[in-house]
Length: 392
Image 1 (cartoon, rainbow, N blue to C red):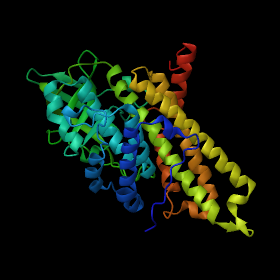
Image 2 (tube, rainbow, N blue to C red):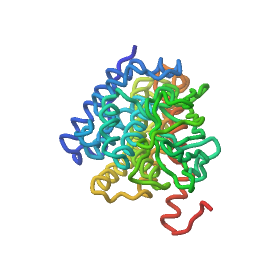
Image 3 (cartoon, rainbow, N blue to C red):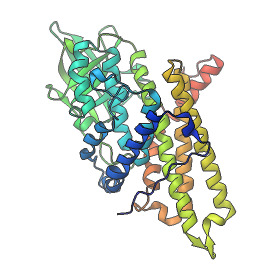
Image 4 (cartoon, one colour):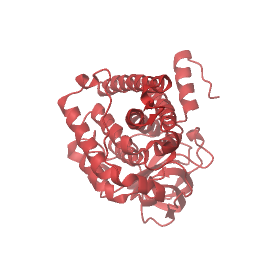
């Protein structure tokens, strides 16, 4: 087992912009990844298994609902702390970060923001501790980039709702205890429902044969005349804007997380370039390798500044959906390009499980698509700056 020698790059001394609490939170997450994730993640990815033994550790470092108030089991941290935790976890693996992102931004966040006090007290503490795991049902087989076209629906049957439909590409679905599901009521209005494991007619088949996010559990949500108690409806917001608010929080975490994957690839490539010798000198002494490494650290630094500023705006309640969209798109594309360049620096060794780069590269092929594809995010920015809608 190779030791985890990762050293985080900070070319512009961005640590000076962080508080001591931020650094403590980051250190706790980084140390946990080195101790509990790095030693087991390659084998988990090769076997296409989610390592459930890490759930307890994720909870202990505050990765589940870090910004949820302490009275509901969260850590009560700010948005930059949340981002730093996601950065460190994705440095370990995008799939592990997906598990934490879903739990925090797509399950705990809507229950906290849109749920009743009874729902908050019932679910949030158990989700924060990892006793309960959750998932988020929005994407459907025929409706991905156009979630408003969903066909999953529920009908009012007097003392309960009857839910029918299906969701797919759902992280955490195979083992989730509760699913936050978005469906249309009889008037066509989108509402959030809490669907609990064990409800008759609710099943979560696992998605197999993935080349990406192999250490993450992905599945479907199938609803066949599922009876939903009326108290499981999220009462405080409806319409497509509700799930999109959740996606804003998740995309913010991804913008930070992708930096972690990029930093890991860069650190691996830099270390290799200084050690691997060809033509009687380290390959890092050759101009083309230095060009690759110089461009990598430049792009990482730009992404760090983008994420930090976005985190500041989030803390102040000023960040727009379009600003979050830009950071998600830019930082994921940056990370994917760095993974590909890093792989080339390692040559043939770059495709082996001895190094993390190929795993990051495959994972990022999913990250660049989920929570809004790269192209969709370009159109979000385009609409924001022109005022013209290219979606229709």
